[in-house]
Amino acid sequence: MKILWGGATAASQYEGGFEEKKGLDTQDCRPYLPRTSNATEETRLLTKEKIEEAKKTNSNQYYPFRNGTKGYEHLEEDIEYLEELGLDIYRFSISWARLFPNGIDEAPSPEGVAYYDKVFELLVKKKIKIFLTLNHYALPINLVECYGGWKGRECIKYFLRFVHFVFERWGELVDYWLPFNEINAGYFSPFNGVGLLKGEDGYNLSEVFQALHHQFVASAKTIRLAKQMKLKGKFGSMIACFCYYPLTSNPEDNLKLLFEEQMNQWYCMDVLSKGEYPYYSSKFFESKNITLNITDEDKKVLKENTCDFVSISFYTSSVITVDEAEKTAGNLVVSTKNPYLKASEWGWQIDPVGLRTSLHRVYERYGKPVIVSENGLGARDVLTEEYKIHDSYRIDYMKAYYEQAQLALLDGVPLEAFIAWGIIDIVSAGSCEMDKRYGVIYVDADNYGNGSYKRYKKDSFYWYKEFIQRHKAGGIN
Ligand code: BGP
Image 1 (spheres, protein in one colour):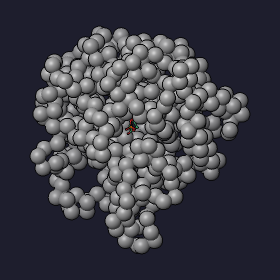
Image 2 (cartoon, helix red, strand yellow; image 1 turned 90 degrees about the vertical axis):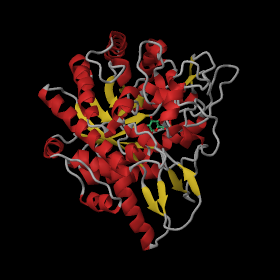
Image 3 (cartoon, helix red, strand yellow; image 1 turned 60 degrees about the horizontal axis):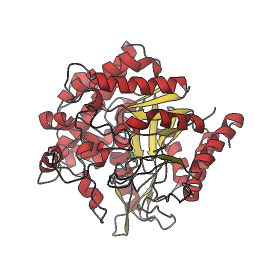
């Protein structure tokens, strides 16, 4: 078995093209705030007032997701870079608000349809396989205002309308489908994940879990629709995966780890993969006074439409302790520092071996093919006067993680694809910065949207290209 090597972007972080009759979505309302210790938190916790500000035409905030990295304008050139890299597979997402600006529109916007027609046409022409994320965080803001985001059951109906159109138009062209990006983010980052606004007392957990329930049902109904329409692609679920370690051998650390891992990491995938709520969820709901509206029809649709493959984003691992300990940042979460690991400038602890362990854990738990749908190093790159980017740190990172992924395959984990995150530089989902770059292709833009937006190949571009070629020729590198 050979791993498909890929690269990914997400519509809100990459496309831009805000003026092209696209509807306003949740990501378009997040301003860039210069980073202080809590700036990233600030920008992820949107309130009604902040949305009002974002809707003003004369707001003096800069909203970076409205520009992305101007993929809308650079599409053909970018896909040529992907072809030159030799990518087997490209993961991208469709912007719901580009197709259905208000989320509830009867018919899609012709401009949006024309843009995605072009994306699919180019990828098919270049023979690059397609991994399509139907919803990568961004939700039309109208659905937040009318229904409170995914806590409103109505979102299921409108999501299915959007999905039905995508299936009819491009359904035959997609190899792998993902209804929701990092679905567990709905729990630890409710604005990003399920479009909930933060009230004065924070988030109401019943609403958070009701919203997640609606996404589970939407995901299962998406799979049911695909079966009815006899689509050929495989359907997956995806979580942000962390590989938890207890800080010490104190049994209390280990027990706490078990509970954190269940609710933070496995919960959503347990539902989507096994088709029912896991045994541990009732006790958790009871302890937090969470009440949910789950109908018999919901239960049936979940049971009958589980996913075909499981996928993870893996950047960093987490450490759990019942005691006070030094903290560091992670993918939309805060974790305890691991004394054995180095971290990126953004505090994300680098743990390639943790990836191998996690691939085992995921396969052993679900017994389904596995995909790494995101991995990469967010780093500050320098464009030299000769227009070069010497990112040896990124090459080291990629080598280390890719080696562990291949070892997991040799161990027997059916790893079908490994997809490098942000293959072309894009705006950071967590911190809204341009400075935090993942790409092997550099985009000349800064945190405030200044720059030529020209593309340049980084040293890692040449490294990845050779790696893929070696892999095509002989399997394991
Ligand atoms: C995941 C998201 C991506 C992405 C990545 C890196 O949570 O699915 O959208 O951006 O993490 O995170 P960041 O951009 O915050 O560095």
